[in-house]
Structure formats: C-alpha cells, structure tokens
Image 1: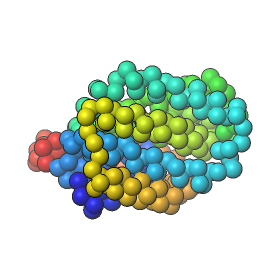
Image 2: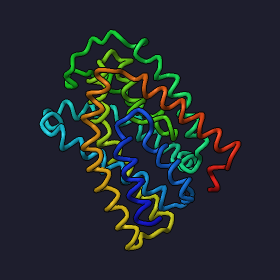
Image 3: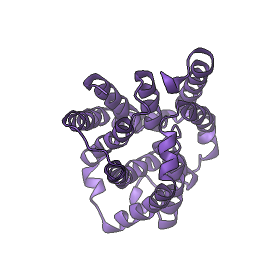
Image 4: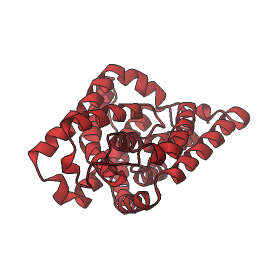
Length: 265
C-alpha cells in the first residue's frame, strides 16, 4: 500500500459507510484493482478506518448520542449479536475479505431486496425519536447487523432494513444504525488489531501513518456525506441504491468472469 492508495480507500470509506451499498465491499473492490486485497495490512486497514468514519456520528449527533444510560443499554443489546458471531466466525470472515466475487453477489442480492424494502415496510409505528426503540427491537436490529459480516451486504443497509422491519421510520432506523455503528466498529477495530499482533505482525512507521491518514480522511468525508444521505433517504427511499447495487454487482461479475479475475489483479 502507498499513500495515494490509502487516501483513495479512505475517501471510498467516508462516502459509502452510511450508504446501504457496503463500504467494506467497495474497499475490497478498490484494493483488488490495486492488487493489495490479499495483503494482511490491507485487511486491517479496511476495518480500522471505518472507525474514523463512524466517529463523525459523535460530532454530528453529539447531543442526541449522550442522552440517557437506557439508550446505551439498548445499543449494548443490539451490539451483543455481532460480538458473538464475530468471535465464532472471525477466520471465515477474514477469508471473505479478499474475495470480490462474494462482494459482487452480495451487492446483487442486496440490490434486489432494496428495490422492495419501501413496499414491505411502509407503516412505521415508532416516532422519529430513537430513544423510543424497545430492547427487543434493538436485539432484532442487532441480529440483522450480523448479516453485514458477509462483505458486500452493507452494515448500514442491514441495520436500517432491520429497523424498518421493527416498524421504525426510515429516518429513525437510519439514525439508530449510525449510533449502533459506534460500539460495533470500535469493537471490530480492537479485535482486528489484537488478531493482527497475535498473528505476529508489527506495524511499520509507514503503516501507522497510513492508518492515521485513512482515519482522518474517512472522518472528514463522512462528515460531509452523512447528512446528505439522511435527507435523500427520507425523501426518496432505497430504490436508487438498489439499482446501483444491481448494476455494480453485474459489472463486477462480468469483469471477473469475462475480462480478468479480480482476486489476482
């Protein structure tokens, strides 16, 4: 990895983290084109810089995030399924992080689902206040989040759809998804760093600089992206993201099978 590649991956992360199109999936695709997808540091980088993007939530929603301990317990309940599944399947998840075909198929299937989401869940009975989410609803949203361990599924997309399935409005489901991302990505970052050192790897000075640059760039870009997404989602729903995912998935599969295998670029 070089500095330019680190910046490009961080920009992709900042733009896509809060969109239901899979930030990890897009970074896997980009790193495959760069020829660095199978590198252990790249796998670490794509996880750790998501924390930088997620921290933009604390800046933009500062007052609403620090409201009540009851809300934190709900986030904890929603976070628990990811901890359990992450510990059980961490090695299998790691193997998927270098496979663009998995990303392409996930993009395609997820796109088809997003085309129907607004029709399936169009009668919310929870107000725009995320504080009113129940513990059971939080747990179910957390289970949906586990689907995002498959690259290309999209953590934000899975949790927003999970929230809407619990009769939350698009806005409240999206905002709860953003809040849930904070403990989730913090936990994923700590776990990934621990595994990296446990496997005998040591970060070089250049790699530390790449992580710093990546987190800063992802944070700044995410600040600009998150508000725009909420406004667009509230007005237009998911269809445009569904069409994007379907087109992207088909293009990637076509490139992989008819032009050049992405895993070895």
